[in-house]
Image (cartoon, rainbow over all chains, first blue to last red; front, side, top):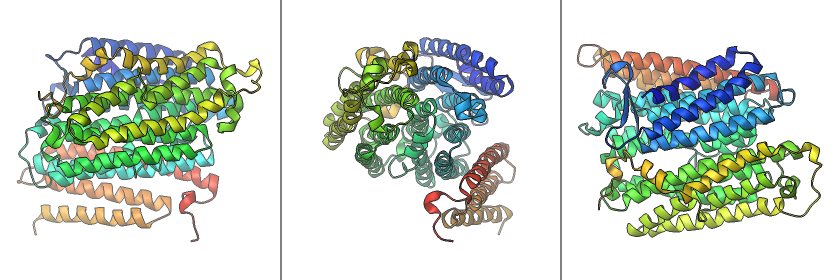
Length: 490
Length: 101
């Protein structure tokens, strides 16, 4: 309980402190805060059990008036992944920060925005109230837009503005759905909504909220804002934005379709979501193949990887909900989300280090960097293994679970998407790897990052692999509090 | 027509007007205003929903106040971005939409 409060309050307090404290004190505070957050995460995960869920009624008010926070396996796993990625991104930002290059405002703004993002992510993962989720989602979007714009270059500002417009439209659609739900049922608590008497506006409300969340998750065809935004943010910010932010709106989608309104999950709508996911896998991968800037390759890869997540809807929702294969699909997709988060953050941090050495993120400027920065390049290669879905990575475990579920369900086309997407990922990741490991003159040792710096992305990529090797612990964690709609039906 | 229905219809009209502005306007400031119109329309509708059945429901009021704060923060950030973008580009429009006019 205390750990849960700390996970929400510490980053908020830290964000306020980062605004008022002098710059040197902030740089001292951030590592201490990260350690505290990691410790709180460990306590939270250790205290989680299937029998007694960690619940918190804010101010002791019961719903529908009060707001309930609840930690299930899904929330705990994502909080842990967030803590790892945030800590790594913070360390990378501390080491690479060049106030003179990025401008005083960038150095000032980064830490409050990063901590607000952390608080918003944790709040979204544990909230069980549709309006509280809205507030969390808004805080998340505003902090993300700020991080994109922080560089101050014209293209970064345009990318941030485009992101802002998509985010605003997304929140209005979501808010419209929330208003309809309240008008029909007089409650916004997900637990109470699950037991509601179905009403006519439910389908419209669910459709509006889903459309809004799709825009925020950057599901195809609402993905156009993502690559320029993630491509023009500073590398540690890109790592957070790409690895974590789309997962938050995706979690709300899961809560809506599997916990609040599983009765409204029509098969046609579920298949449509998965078809859009399929289109995202194909389109994102093809676009990634064509990019000449490494950051954009990695950003388009996020568009593709987000697509996989939407395969969960026909495999675990609607008619599949009661079936034995639904549990595998549910756990598999969460494995994919966790593995993608860790691997994508590792990739962006690696790209950031190469950019610091070569001064650009053009692919042809990266030639032969593997000789000079072996650890960073190894991290990138390990992350690529996870994104392609090769064993023994977390990405493989996720794809394996999803594929087994797709075959058991007789919906083999989703298995084709998984296999084809893996091949496409191998294709678009082969190019940067081939360039990195090509023989070329290495830049002088004076400009290279230290071994400690190079170890940061390596730790993240290693965690993504470890997720596959030691998959039993996360597997059990993810099954805690799995919604009834994705319960093992055998 | 009862007062509550009038409120709900006003809210719907505001949402419709704002939606048109969001699609039709290319100037970014107009879009932010349209966003605020839609938000206000939704809040009016929510207030009307909370006033049904005679006695006022306090929850929508709390939600509306929170929502206004959120919309204000979002508008402030959006306007700040527009100013920065206009300074950098000379016009308050997105590069890909800045054709003619």
